[in-house]
Length: 133
Image (cartoon, rainbow, N blue to C red; front, side):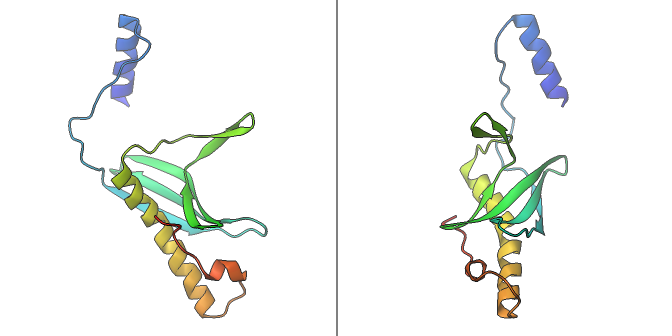
């Protein structure tokens, strides 16, 4: 947070519209993912995830959704007019892929377990895929 405040001060002092700071290291951050199953009649959302980066920064309200072409992960967003805008942007493809798969794995395992045990679930939810991730 201190870097953000420092950059803001620099922006005010220089009069620039934007100041950018690159990280010293471009390695992927360490992260953990916690997924909670989510079920609501008529909803395609099957889980909610929380991603913690470097034990320092958390991204909550990450949705695991069963779509027509398989499951996908939707970052937190808000509605602006008729469009939805992401609150968090994904920048590094390899990190995005790893973190998204970590969000999907527990949900797929749990749904497959329920389907094998014959629990009452909509048929479409018994054949979950990752939609090409």
